[in-house]
Length: 597
Image (cartoon, rainbow, N blue to C red; front, side, top):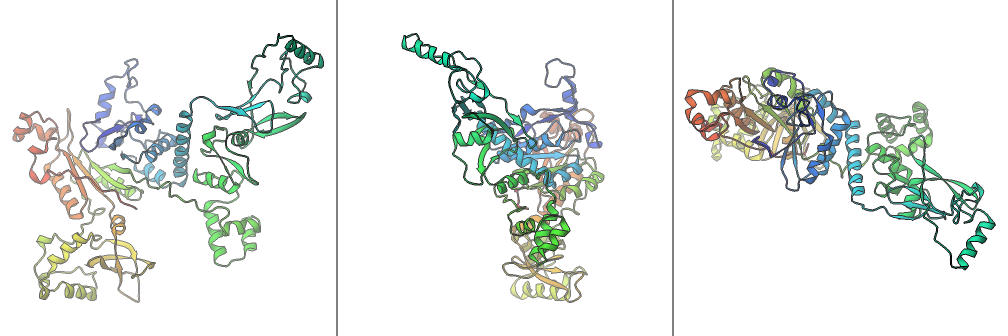
């Protein structure tokens, strides 16, 4: 558990970091871990040096009760020295534990944006999900089960993916001497004399069951990683794929044209939970899910999309084949979805719905630097940690207010209302007619309706439906709320019209909002830099006008030490973290709702 007020649990799959901005200057994680540098056997024996903690990756699998989990409170998950595959394994665990909510905070906004938008990284996360699921199933298997290899007397196959040779296959049943290759798996004794001796000993009652000579075979590994073993049957040599032997022994014989598929993408992992029968297309699809292609593929994913689109538009398939250097048949297969088809992602939603991504914003300079990357990053929740808050921060660029003014500040009549110049006269007229004073309405009612309906921000530039109906086209314009869920999009570059009719839903609102949650707090500890209360108050106002959740964590040690805050000091609140002693307008601790983007 943790004392951090906005989370329930910390999960450190990496510890240690390096400083990149003023917010790092008084890093609590560094101060804590460096206390134990050089202490033999201690978890922080290496102080705050960057250290991977792979042994902690699977911890969330043991947490049954849902909780908010702060990922890497003692490091930065997107630090440049953390390998991509380690990050992917962490995301795979998050995907496998949807009962939890994961909060990831970074100052490495560029790498976060790059990885979260990378199809290769998403494929690696998918592969790691499969790897972990297979591994967990293997760990639950228990004792190895060994059965006869179908069609190969003298050989055994195990559900762990091993192939064994037994007595009578390559050693004599009686004397255990070596059999010549042409006799392996065909007869049980190395010579007629040995066989007669065995029969005589048995007849005389002196027969002793020979010792088990089962021996695990060492397979060969091919260029694509598949493993084969050499088996003998009736004096003939056979080269068999290990995964096909396992499936045939524990599942069923292959149907015509079927291939064995390795679920986790590792062709050397022939344990039964990692195998299934499928077609060549299924194998190709698995590679695509895992973010890689056949090593001999001539096409990129973008080229395959071009071929499919151009073929659908009527272009000659022969011409397309010549242009892209492939066969007519391949063009037909791509056009009809038999090759390079999109993989259904119903079992794997990206971005992960339980993962919140955030950046640290200690001042306006860091806001201008990091927030643009955050809003370009797919996430169920995007948040800011303005802690330590070292100066005033204006977030309205990414959190525009829902209404042009608060409802209680709007005039009671349209005669006193001032429209922005960019709103067309006809749009103004229609809104004023609907919200007319003659019907007991006013600009205040119009603004309240924006909030009640969950409208997109007034004046925000959005891509929305152009008109109504089941599948209207999309158009880009500045949004003006009208009534209910109906609005207008003011168009800048359309010579034929000034605006478009549109409507909105919850998804539109989510897409319009760049930031979903803001945490504000002052610095604590020795040497803490002061945070002006007005900086935090201004953030709260900005969030309230944009209907963005806000969480004031603490007012900081400098505030708590101020003689004017004697109540906090008297009660031992050295961090200024007890809201009971704060001004009432700062006593707000809200959490966001995850949204579909």
